[in-house]
Image 1 (cartoon, rainbow, N blue to C red):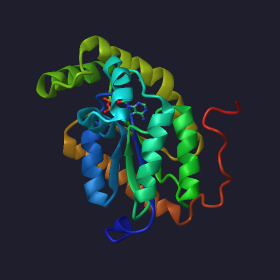
Image 2 (image 1 turned 120 degrees about the vertical axis):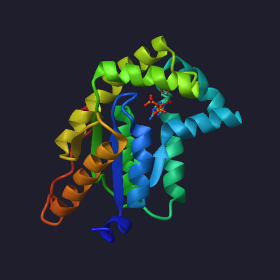
Image 3 (image 1 turned 60 degrees about the horizontal axis):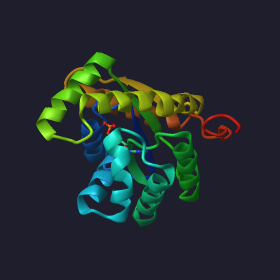
Image 4 (image 1 turned 90 degrees about the horizontal axis):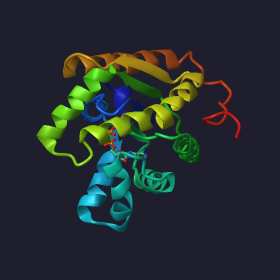
Length: 217
Ligand code: ADP
């Protein structure tokens, strides 16, 4: 098992609403499986902090809790893939729109990789708001005020949640209970990935490719 986790291609998507704990779990799971964590939120915050042109373009969207335009995000991710020594990634917070999901499929095809699993962390709404407000106090992230949090949750529901059906259709979607302590949640995710590994040898490799992320335009 341990050997299998450190070789070959592996692309894990970590999805879920703001406050679900994606960032924390992404770091833990990536370290454990030898994956490179690619967090579009972290990359954007880094650009903002460095005052790059990209950061300046992204900041207003982030402060409002709106999504940064697809072309910015896709450019960032594609550059990271270009430089990667191996296609072993844990994607945290990407894709978030149908356009991003389609771009990801194209990028992966180019690099001869495919999605191993799309894991959704399920946490109920009240718990989400409670966690986000708590984090606002601790970290002082500028997009953690209550009205911006509500907008981020709304944006998630409208723009990102529909993608879950897309990955469900590809049979890569796995729901994980995101409540409880950190170790327990990581263990649940580990179990999901190990179960997929076991299943993949007699699994769906011959399956035909799925359609576009939101049906036909
Ligand atoms: P959260 O999941 O709590 O919203 P993130 O750190 O993932 O936190 O994202 C913070 C902000 O960065 C988002 O509100 C959005 O403005 C921007 N962002 C991050 N990832 C993406 C993405 N894939 N597409 C568009 N905007 C993004």
